[in-house]
Image (cartoon, rainbow, N blue to C red; front, top):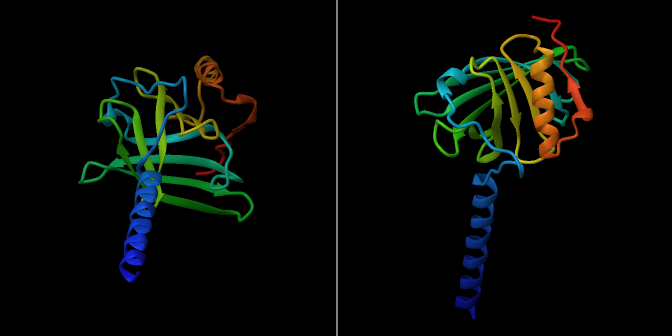
Length: 182
């Protein structure tokens, strides 16, 4: 009987480990969206200003949001997100890492700010000069418009918003990020 219990416990631990592994390593892209390919990962590095986002708890009440991407020695990307918390009247920063899902020439990455837990980061649209980007998360809850400058031309906004609507995003729910601090 003791051996049967040990086998059952070992099996339960094994299944639990597989569930955790699956939850932490599986990232997706919203249905109907396609990541940019070919994608130039070197050109994507550097500082980006958040123009708009679908709000969620880790960015709530933030203005002046930027994301800076730099290459780590191991080939992953350091993600440095920074924003001004209007409720605390102070800067907030989150450091994470990103890894490519399908190779450096496809704009599909997985990003982690919390240990082994990853989320999808999918570059869906980018201009030829890598000045403006549309990024979608795993699902319709996460989306960002990014720019190398503190604003984005209206024509680019309209194009990216139209692409997001086709995928199913509620673009009326976007939070438009203020950039009034350095």
